[in-house]
Amino acid sequence: MTETAAAAAATAAAAATKRIPGPLGLPLVGSLFDLTRRPLRTYLDARRDYGDVVRFVAGPPGLRAEFYAVFSPEGAHQVLGSQAANFRKDNSFYDELRTSLGNGLLTSQDGDYQRQRRLIQPLFTRRRVDGYAQAVGLECRVLADRWRAAPGGVVDLAEEMSRFALRTVSRILFGADVEAAVEVVHRSFPVMGEFVLERGFAPVRLPRSWPTPANRRGAEARRDLYAVCDRIIAERARRAERSGTADAGVAAGGVDAVDGPAVSDDLLELLTRARGEDGERLDPDELRDQVLIFLLAGHETTATSLAFALFLLAKHPEQRRLARAEADAVLADREPGAADLEALPYLTRVLKEAMRLYPAASQMGRRSVEESVVDGHVIPAGAQVILAPWVTHRHPGHWEEPDRFDPDRFLPEREKERHRYAWYPFGGGPRACIGQHFSMLESVLALGALLREFDLEAIDRGVRLGQGITLQVKSPMRVRLTPRE
Image (cartoon, rainbow, N blue to C red; front, side, top):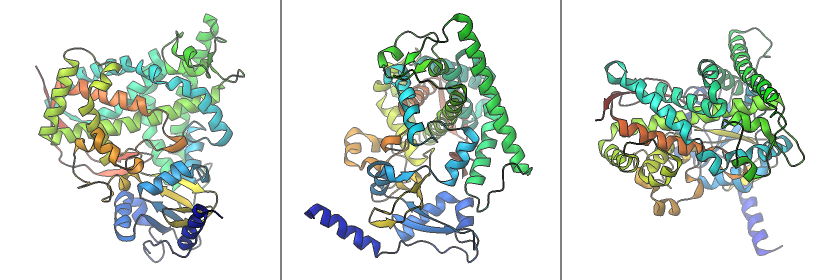
């Protein structure tokens, strides 16, 4: 045995003798109520009291679930990166999400995931994504006009950014068909999110076929979402057939083909025409699954990041002044474009700091395949594992005064000093978010465009948070707008 292997074996043996600590919770249900009613605070308290790997037990006797929360950057790296093959999306939450929204990139695994990634990755090259900046600019103009007409100059940022991000991703996905999707998705996604979360963490999951109120609401939301996507996809196929472009495939393995001229600029057209090296393509059901996942991931996460970035600036006059000055200097009186992203470093730092404090994916789950050692602790085979960026982004070992808003934490020299997984709002490893460049592009350009048009002052000083599929705002997030001359 080599010296390195011997050291690793010794570490594993030492870890095996240590029982992972954790709260006992209540006698009959363990930590169930804490985890369902206030998970973010529960995880923060657990890291403070028990350390970076914590064992939780939740549920009544006979139905008790055991899982392990990993809070350190080192542990997150092992689960998402160096040991990613051992930690799969096999838990109950992903099962429910897969059943509700299909087997798209977020939920698929193994061969399905590899095939989808091969077909879709070329549609998210930097050059292709930069082409979506025009849609961002258009929706910024629509939003600015809406804000100028706001009664009393007061808007709720959570609601406004949700609608803005949904309209933007829908326009990029569907092009001229954007209006057909927005209202249905805006109405149905919150219902679906609550349904998935409740079932994903319930000790007992009743069959979906039982006509309970929750099942009926979930089924109706799913039907509405599937129907609007299927209708748009079918109409797009009819248009392609009429125009003779149905077989004009885009080679998924060839970036030049994807980045070249296209029949349409919207993503659905590109997904429809995408082909693998052997001619494989996405069938209509797979198209719908991808569209639904893009709608979820492309609007809820971006909406959360944008809302909190603007809200934090509305509460911090000095940082708002710096951000506004940069937007004025770079954008002047023109629409933002993709080339402006590199010229807006302060706005980028503001966004990253907002995503540190309020990560849209505040927790994420995996299931271990085999027993492994994570951050010095043995995680058994078949264990449910929770990662919590909400906690890691506030880890006192990696962030000084972690609750303070300070965009300069993300100066390049300071970023280089930190662990790669001290900040991971887009996940990491081989399954890192495929749309992270698009999310950053959309958010930074939108921040610049809106700060150029309006000054903001916070009315609500704090907000109440909840946990859905993503981080949820459960109380008003109002600001007063003053149009700038």
